[in-house]
Length: 151
Image 1 (cartoon, rainbow, N blue to C red):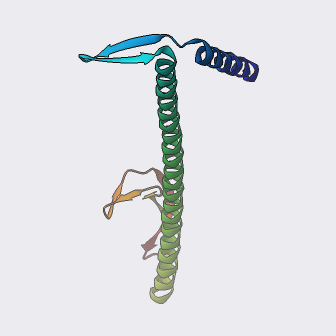
Image 2: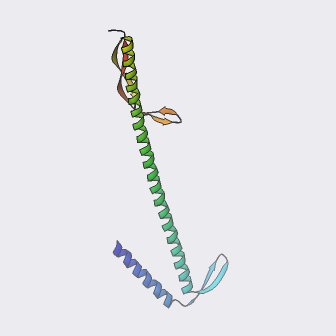
Image 3: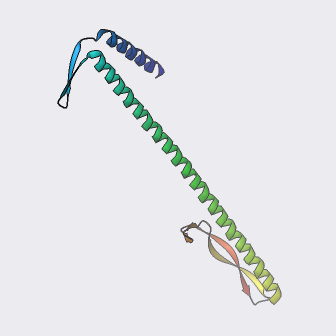
């Protein structure tokens, strides 16, 4: 690929030099109702300049698109990390709330002398929070306490 690029560069430089030294005949260019008398060399130089400007514009567009894609990837990764951290914290919060609930139930049962049995309940551990409300998520079975008045 590099060899082909170097070959094309050499050929284009050679053609440019050849054109600049050989093209000296007069040319009349008509465009949009206007006629301009010039030489073939000047027309060639104008074409080279237009080509270089076009290549520069394509390069700038390509660079801008790559930069935008990189920024988008970085934002997406940051959002994914934020969501993962939020889910982990919500799961940790649910676990801590469950432990607190267990501790309070055990303390209450010791005071009242009631027996505490475990019951199953469904707890959402991966809720997504939007505008202060939980949306979606998956569930897992959590063990809760159920106070029984049996001794």
